[in-house]
Amino acid sequence: MKIGILTGGGDCSGLNPAIRGAVFRALDYGDECVGIVEGWQGLLSCETEPLDLVRVDEIIDRGGTILGTSRTNPFKDTTLVQQTITNIAALGLDAVIAIGGDDTLGVATKLAALGVKVVGVPKTMDNDLSGTDFTFGFDTAVNVALDASRRLKDTALSHRRIIVLEVMGRHAGWVALYTGIGSGADYTLIPEVPVDWDVMVRQVMTAYKRKKYAFIVVSEGVEVTTQASVEKLDDFGHMLLQNRGVGPEVARILEEKTGVSTRSATIGHIQRGGSPTLFDRILGSRVGVKAVEMVHDGDFGKMAALRGTEVIAIPLTEAVGKLKTVPQEWVDLLKVFSK
Image 1: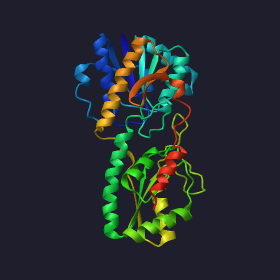
Image 2: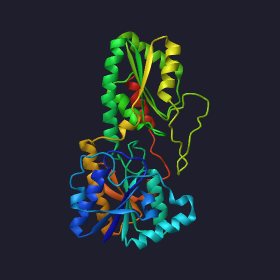
Image 3: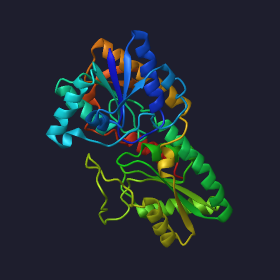
Image 4: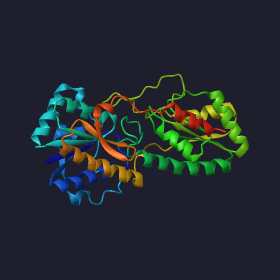
């Protein structure tokens, strides 16, 4: 078989292990793998590259994606949809493996409904994709945030300050939640819970008086003010969140309310890159392998999902359209560590 592989949406660590896993498994079947460059855009422009053992053998420890990525949405225009389907046939592809998050897999779901033989591989550093327990990219992102947390806490204590760390997370607070608990943060703000400034200030000052510093983690998607943010939108209608400045705004308000010198740090895209953790290397490799097996099993319109310790095929419709946000039991656990 001739299998096309693409990576779409935001990059994250684990994409290259997933590509590698797919190619390695395809070799067992005698398949030919073709890399589709820059996500769905590559199918519109027919830009591809061969994926053989030499190309992928040494990429397991590399961040990002060797295929490049984009936020192109062919379903913005019906002519682009037909062009995508036509080009899949013109390239002689027997199947397409789409590696991405909610948007990329949303396109895959719609194409599958039109008869395209497509299999999904879930990825997102936000860990907000439904249908799977974890997505690769998340573990690496949180470990980067944990490293930043330790460094910021050191300087916060040295200068007797409050420091706010802003991490990624548009609608779901998984990165902030895990960073907050894992770093021993004194307070953590996530998009799922409205900001209660009175409670927050009281807790922050309690910690500050006890330790001579305080450390706060905030997700970039938290609504800090009542003033609506105006940002550019991508092809899928999402705000790009380039100029919201949630961390600096939280720091400004905290300093105003507490009278304590407060600083902020935003690690932003540093969380996306870098060598993947062991967890993300293994998970990426496993779902890549599973995707090729699904192609040969005829499990189209499905994705490779981690359920417990097993990787199984589930319908793409279970994954897209509804984000996996932080549930109440995790919010309750977070409150335990605010003392």
